[in-house]
Each structure stands twice: as C-alpha cells, then as structure tokens.
Image (cartoon, rainbow, N blue to C red; front, side):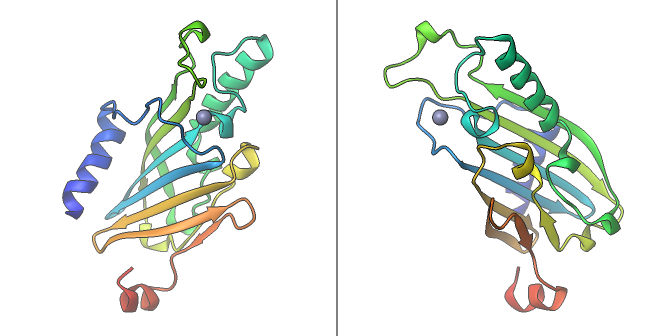
Length: 186
Ligand SMILES: [Zn+2]
C-alpha cells in the first residue's frame, strides 16, 4: 500500500499529473492539507489550501493589487523551504516544484450559484542528505498566509501514514524520537 500511495504522490510531484482535486465542492476556509512522504532520503511534500487562506479572495483578481497578491502568493508557494521548516541537519535541497492556482481564471459571470471557490495546490520534491534528521517540522507558512488557520498533515513513511494537525497557535509537528517512533510504529 505504501509503495502504491507513494508512487501516486511522487508521480503527482514529478510528472505533474493533474489530479482532479479541485471541484466546486465547498472546502472549509482556514483548513488545508499537507502530505509529506518519505522515501529514503527523498521527500515529497504536497500542499492543498483554499484560495481564501492564501490570498484572501476566491475569484479572478479584479485590481492590480489583487493581481500582485496572486502573483506574490504563487512566488511564495514556489519556495518550500520558507514554508516548511526542516532541520538544517537534514540538508534538504529542493528539486521539482509545481504550483497551481485553481479557479483564478474562471470568469465571475460563469460562477455557479453560491459563489466560487478556488484552491492552491503545490507539490515539492526534495532530496535530503539525512532525512532521518527530520523529526520536527515547523510551519512558517502561517506567517506568509494570513488566512491559513489549520492544516491536517499526513506523514507517510514505509511504516504507513501518521496524521498530525498543525495550527496557527501550534505551527509545529513533532515526530518524536527514533525510540518513540519504533515503539509506536510511527
Ligand atoms: Zn472557498
């Protein structure tokens, strides 16, 4: 199962297969998801967040200010090491980066009843000299994106997935010590 899921994640990151992740289904503003997959010293991070959380509006930009905000958000999303705080000892280097702003080019007149929703998706492939050093991950992305309140984080390793929650008040994920991880299977 691990291999299959990880392959899916890696494929999304590296090949850029357009996952049908965006839909008109309302998401919950303030709440996003992050998937972090470890495969040896390779790391794939996926981020999904409502547009409201990242730029504060969920429709095409209508002013130069909004256009600038959208461009700035995409640029910020392309710098994963400024969004996810990885221990320096891991010595991670960013490889492929994919950022998608979904729904920002949909004419407002075409908006469905109930309004539009937009989402940001990003996928990052990293290579780390010592991925085992990544026990704690901080989330400075809360400092970048004022609308983000919470992320459900899934950490995927060969031992399976582990769920975490990080919030603006507690923007830190602690995977515990190696012994703890061995005892708990995390
Ligand atoms: Zn929305």
